[in-house]
Image (spheres, rainbow, N blue to C red):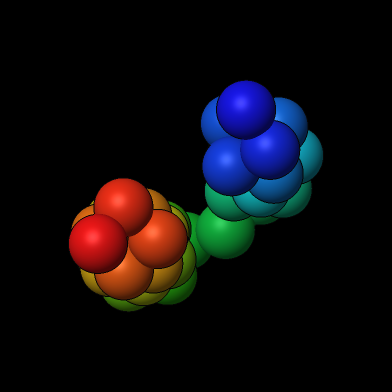
Length: 38
């Protein structure tokens, strides 16, 4: 699935982000995932 591949790429870059940015980005990914499924 395309979304999984994109998320995998994002996860690699997340390793270098601060916890706060990681949390915000995680919420964004979940939000987008919900929109796609609806």
